[in-house]
Amino acid sequence: MKRFITTVIAIWAFGIGSFAQMDTVKIGLETYVIVPAGSKINYDSLFAIHPQLELNPQYYINRYGEKDLMYKITDNKGMGFDSLYGTRNMRPVLHGVAYRGGANNYYHETEKRDNQNPLPVDGLHNLCEEGFSNSVYLYRHNFEGYPVGDTCSCIDSSWNALKYQQLDYYDSTHIYKILEMTYLSATNPEVGPVYIHCWNGWHASGYVSAVMLKQFCAYSDWNAVNYWDLGTDGANTSPRYQEQRERIKEFTPYPEFMISDSLQKCLCPPMPEYIDSSQLHIEIEHLVVVPEAIPVGSQIVLYNVTFSPGKTTFTGIGTNPDILYLMQALDIDPNLVVEIGGYTDNSGSYSENVSLSAQRAKYIYDFLISKGYPAERISYKGYGPEKPIYSNKYKSTREGNRRIEIKVINKTVHGGNQLVDESVYQNANVVDEEKLKKTYLTYFFANQGSNDLGSVFIIDSLNFPSSMATLPDSGYGKENLDHLVAYLKHHKHVKISINGYTDASGVEDNNLVLSEERAKAVYDYLIANGIAANRLMYKGWGSQNPIAPNRYKWGRDINRRIEIEFVSD
Image (cartoon, rainbow, N blue to C red; front, side, top):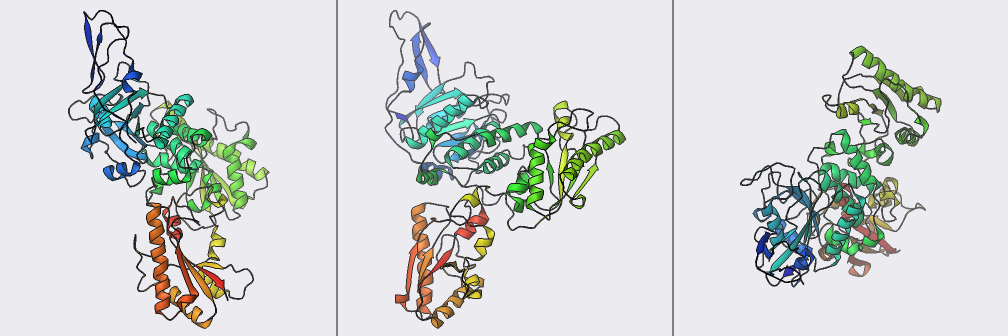
């Protein structure tokens, strides 16, 4: 996946005439073009060079040590990988296809300049040498007169051509071009990776990358938003960033750029195994979509509820999306109890602000009471200018402090502690929590004779060391395995199939081998404990048939399982 050129090209003017005067035009760190004065260069001709060598995603995974979507190849000061100096906060989006980050200008050791600039020339050249075919600068500032590409000797001594262009991440037609560019890199072995960058590698590149993950990795709206928040390195608290989150949710993937499931598995990095939920952005919709992820005591801003200055009501309360989500959450969970809190900025007197904020909170309280919600489940309070979530120094941020927050006083306690994929339970392969309880072997043992029992059961808590097929010597999983031995000895005509599964991490071919080795370990244990081999079968299924979302640790833990399928009795 890398574009190379085989010769150094000298580009001369089109319409060759007098060569009395020549200009040398620099187009990269080490690339110059000699043309007659006043002539134009056909850059497309320069970069339209037939590739000779291909580097697949695994090459880049190994070269950069790519682990997950938050793994930094270069850090905030551009350090960490010398061959990519000039980039900043560089991270993989699609292995060997798309990368995001910033431009290392402010922290540059030898050519320091203002942060609000394109890539330094050495950064552009280093990307070229790493085999990148394209780089995109996402802002309009300071791009005039900047090199539109580079040609170079690559890491394997072949030649590469890199195109550099400016596209606006706020322009939907430009987003389409970036996705098209990425699709070509993903599906055409002659096209190398693309580096999408802004200044810091946080917000603009994060937005485009979140869109890429929706397009190419089937990310849900909220998974994409959570990814954006995590990728800002904590710089996600300004009220203006709410627009970015809404844009991410509104993006709809283009059918012409869909890729196969097998290519997704090859290209899509996982989210980090451990996620700091304090960095994630919470909205009232989460209380409907993933109530298990919202703990008691959480305070949730109603971003779509806004009051004009000095006003205590607003139009359209019955159709306001945040109010509708709040009512839906109250409907879904009969144990949900909330406080409606009103807040202001610090302009004006404290007592007047407290009174104003209380009246605004009461307006929403009265509306909910009028809709039949009992008063014992809803309360309200005005906090005035207390607990500002943004700076009161500027008008734009003061507006964010004039807000309504919902505080969760009580709710039904669910399992899980991560924000999860809202579409999980629409997937036929993924079971809900109640159904999951009935799929464990302990449930089978406790409910023998019941009419609603299935035929396939998971051995509870039978965990293997990472990448290994060694059975544990003790523990709850070992006890359940011994319970299975006792059951089979008592029911001598029962035959079983032992099915091994992994999560979706790693290479699928390896997962198939590992899952079969684990299934065989159980098979061997049963035989060693007196169960006849003609009553047993085993097979490894790799990451097929997930029963929980693979993007989260708790889901991957469930998917790494041994299932016992009762064949006959």
